[in-house]
Length: 523
Image (cartoon, rainbow, N blue to C red; front, side, top):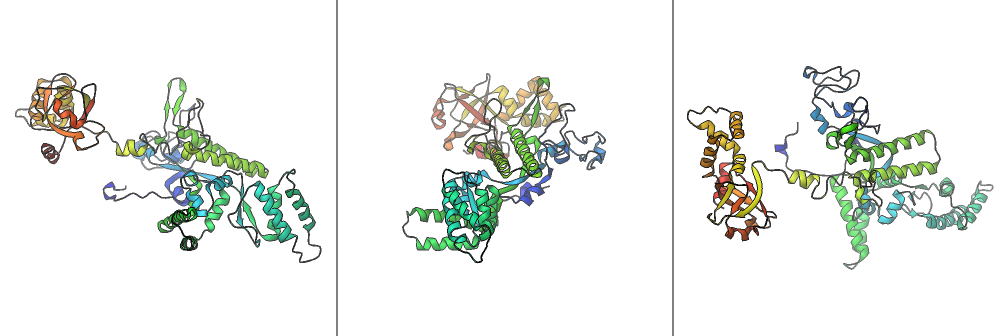
């Protein structure tokens, strides 16, 4: 088990396909979630017990093993490990993509990291990834074609006509060389705007003589990223910067940004091709739950729908490959898979976000991380505090400025552990445990109120009014127990909190340790 006390820092970086596979316990291959007849997770599906662990403590899927004495055993029939269901909060799966898909953060981010690494404008890069334009992967022996050159239909017509005319038809090394006459026909056809342009046929013709290779989609971008020599690229960009002049030169600013990205890849040891995904991690099922409703229906997390779409598109593309479907159909299926992966990672960045049956935008992985309601700010930074309360404030003109009126019922809950300790320490006390003390508190025994009076005399509390914009937004007070439900406050301390008595609320916090109490006293 990982020791959190030894944790000094957290580093977030791109993961390799091998690392993503090592995180997972198995591959998710089916889009199904729960079997509606048996009410159990479908094998190899998004809630598979074999991958993510049992849905009941110490019970396998088929019911062959049902006791804690079998802990750690893997069922021979269903393949489920007999263990606690809590593992379903931490075990991950993965989806192997039939065709690589780009990571939308690195394509559509500002600036586009993938575009900077390749030296391609973001708009052109998107055209390649979403199957609008082709890209030159390797120019071969051609002097006209350039590596990483993006070719839309208009550019491709012009460039291919020039390549065929000057580099293929113009160089006849032997009599009777095949297909040269065909090359003349191709030039006539591609220069005629009224005729359809078949990129695949023309590119194959050029590849045969010049050894050039072309590509489209994230797969071709990944091939280019694999060929990048970071040291060489950094050297080239550094030379460009030395030769360029003018601080506000747009070309210079772009070169500086590109150099920063290239150096960050070099120093971190992260490979640029990892920006294109071959494997997608599937997060634990307890983080994307399905809740049963009345009438046999289920309420499900949006992530399950987004994962389902990825698996469906991935399975369909695999079937098209197996059936040797035409290239046009394969390219269309690849584009749809890319869009499904984009929706899963960051649905909000897409031009047309995926929606549910009610036309509401589905909440993607990025949506659950970012913003005030995201995982970081809501759950990791903004945790609920034990021994704290909240109530409306009301005026207490009879109080001293260092005192606050604390409702008696609120004080009983805030000082609960101190009350139990106080009662157990009394002479001839029959209260020997926290449980007995809790029973007395629930019954509102008079001894509880005697105890709270004694404890509150020497125990300060902290009052906080949001938003806490400066140090006076949180101050310590001596609690005076009062009847009612509103916190009482002297009017002269209100300016520090920027508070008034028109319905403002304040939070009460109890310092637990001796050190915290002493610090509160000295505030």
